[in-house]
Amino acid sequence: MAHEESSKLDKLLNRLEHCNEESSHALCMSAFLAPLPIPYEILEGAFGPGPMPVLQPLSRLGLIEVDRENRTYTLREDLREDILSDLGREEAAEYAGLAVDAVSAALPAPEQSREGLCDRLLPHALACVQHMGTFRVYYRQDARLLLAAGFCFFDQGRFAQAEPLFRKALDVVEKTYGMDHVEYLRTMGDLSACLEELGKDDEAESLLLRCVMTAQEAFGREHPEHAVALTNLAGFYMDRDLCEKALPLYRQAVKINTKAYGDSSVEAARDVNNLATALDRLGRLDEAEDLYRRAWSLYEATIGPDHADTGVVVNNLAGVLEARGEVREAGALYRRRLEILQANYGVDLSCPEVEEAVADYAAFLKASRRATVLERLKRKGGL
Image (tube, rainbow, N blue to C red; front, side, top):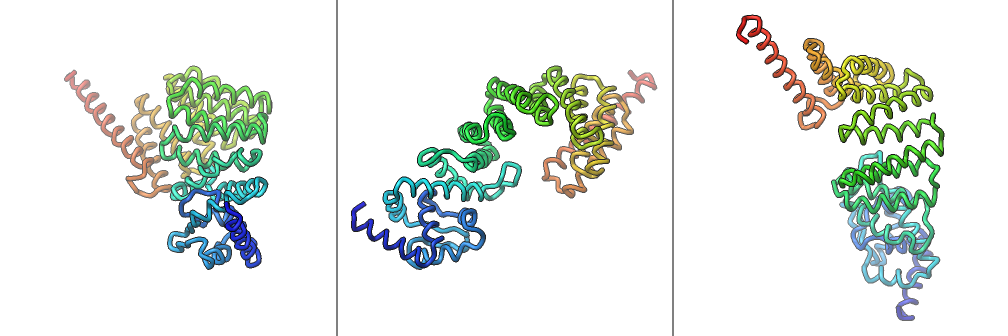
């Protein structure tokens, strides 16, 4: 940048600092975001709710264009280049870090709903990813941004684009938290789920086995995090119809969580249902029925009779009873599952859970009526 242009920018920043120091910081931070409209959520992630006091001085000087209807602002492209070339390395590191923190705060956590936010925030998250490690060492907030961006791609079925973000997140978590931290285990689990979707089963299994060993070494054999790792590995085997390999893992998880949380806890209910599912798939219906009934009772006592998870167990038990020919109780339980889903989702047939339950009940009715007709024919000597 020419000396005259540099002086012009310095004077501009001085004017902004005189008017509003936060506006100056927002302007420099914005240069490290994508050259697209910047959502207010990012600015609020850095400076708190109500972005207009920060944006008004910038708009008044013609440095940005504000779109109040879409809650975005756009930085002049020529000004972006001036800022990036004029900032010293330490200042660039400060503003790059501010951008990472702001986008990370705006992105929803993995367990939160991401609907509507990913499209607005993802380009800016990817711009921040490019700055990570360039100006500064990694911070814990970087891992949160990488995971949140990865899940945005994951939700859209763009697993190949999610994979490098999860891998980088695991690297950052290892550097900032260490390998004996729960965040390291959970990030390994996230990466393994992505690898499964990409058909990289061998590497996914290897990561899940690492999770089991790491949890055992870091927390001990009887720690709930060890049970989580065992359950995730068992789920991997169940998805591949390797129920014999899953069964001992589920049994171990039941023992750990029963000791940790008690035998009347929601954790115990979940583990018992998992164990019953493995036995069910192996055709050990008597054992499965007993465990499903126990899980049902535990869920009703802990999370309530109308909770969606209670409905899952009810449906599982109905399937076992149907397989054993106990048609009357199976039908009652299929109807009960529909009642639970109605309590949670209404009667919206576009809801996948409701649609599945209706289909299951319809298939049951069709099969049970056919069985009744066949039995009548047998009695009459028709078969």
